[in-house]
Length: 287
Image: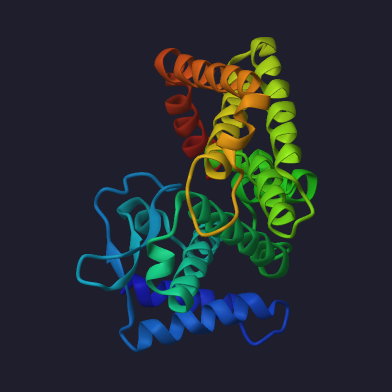
């Protein structure tokens, strides 16, 4: 069966070497879960493209599943670096699910993004330690390596996830600093205003469709992070928005309006570029 072939070929690639303890643990754990029928592969007819042709879920029957589309199967060969890279990415999700169980499945959208970022880091580790020099890499794998080295995967996540890892990193650090009492609420508001104004002012300067898309993703990521810190109640300390509204309300309200105005304009009038971008990445970056 194709699923046995997937596992066997990946096992040969990883072997018994000690290039990466993380990769070995992820593979060994996944292998054990499949052997014990605690995880399974499933064909997913809805996956019609290669780049979005594999994924991880907990199905309605409670099974941990790696879903695989027909195009992934049809284009698979033991010499295809991309198929192995995509598989190790989903095995990282299976590995995390095995540790966190339903906390992984029921995580917030912000937490989900960080699971994706970590899985991309595992891809980089896998490519660097097991594929480079042995396989012909696709444009996607070269891009993820290049982006990891140059901007900590920010460019890559903007292209493939439609979020900005660097924006999320900025606000994650803000939350950490605040919860360690190293950052005040006034500091948070200043960061919000400074970052927002920078990208709001960048958007009108967009000279082409891609730069407009790039700035839109920065702004949408920024809006989402601001809402996480300011508006979503949780058990952690968050900014007391009401307390600071008299002092900063005018600036924050104006910024929110401008952020939403840009997002709405892009999604109503220019979102066709994203569809074309998906097709371009599918056709060009799988080679």
